[in-house]
Structure formats: structure tokens, C-alpha cells
Image 1 (cartoon, rainbow, N blue to C red):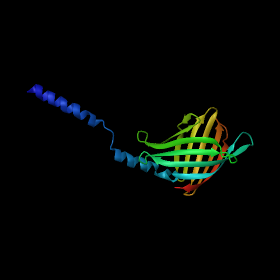
Image 2: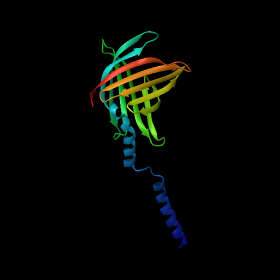
Image 3: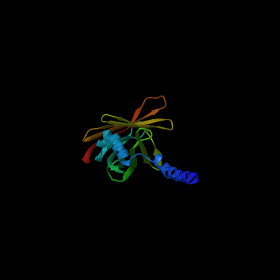
Length: 179
């Protein structure tokens, strides 16, 4: 009798063990992720305009810039695709992609960018109507600040050598063309 009770108890414990470590309710996680992305929902849509990119001391180039931003994964992620084109030839001279998502383990939004085969996970700060992202590079730090309204996007990028004064490396002004 004890042997049967022990075997039955072992069977119940073995079957119940996976239940104890299961992930949280997926619908609750979706709600939490969507809520975390809500402050930057204005990004979603298509944006077009110009960027002026600094090319060394005193020089810059003009780029026709577009940003295509969509939700993905049940609206729990935002995907960004940025394309810069030569204003004369329309040839692509800049292309990048990024994703933003809520990390439940860290309790914060995270971002991953991709350009020219390189991936960066910048620090991300969400302020009212502003998204700031920054990361270290060899010799200094790059920082971008995007100021948003429902119809306009103004992004300024700066570079600062360690301990130095930041200087502007990009000024981008876009208008929403689609939601």
C-alpha cells in the first residue's frame, strides 16, 4: 500500500512540477508590454524629410531621410527602418534598423540597433514627447534625442569625446506622411 501511495505521489509531483515554473499568463504580458510602449506610440507610421549629417570639421551632407515604423509581435515590439538617400540620385547611402521592446525581467524598455553589420544596445530614456538613446563608441559617446509631436520628428545626434564637450553630428527633421 505504501509503495502504491509513494508511486502515486511521485507521479503527481512529477506532473505538477512543470506547472510551478511556467511563464506568466501571455495575455498579461502582452498588456504589460503594450502599456510600456504606449509613451512612444507616436513613432509608429511613415516619416519623410531631410537630415544634415556632419562630415568632419565644417562640412555636412544633405540626405533625404525616411523612417518606417511598425508594431510587431502582437504589438509588443516596435520595428524601425531608416533609409537615407542621395537627394540627386536617390541612391541609398544610409540604412539602419532597430527594435524596441519591453524587457519584463529588467522592468524597462530596451532597444537594439543594426547598421552595416554592427549591433548596438543603447541606453534608452523615454521622456514626455522625447526619446533619448545613447551608447559608447571608441573614443567617446554618441547620443540621439528625438522630439516628437503628432506630425513632426526632430532628431539631433551628438558625439562627445570622453570628458569633452558634445558636438552635433546629425540634424534630422521629418514630417509624418502616414500612420
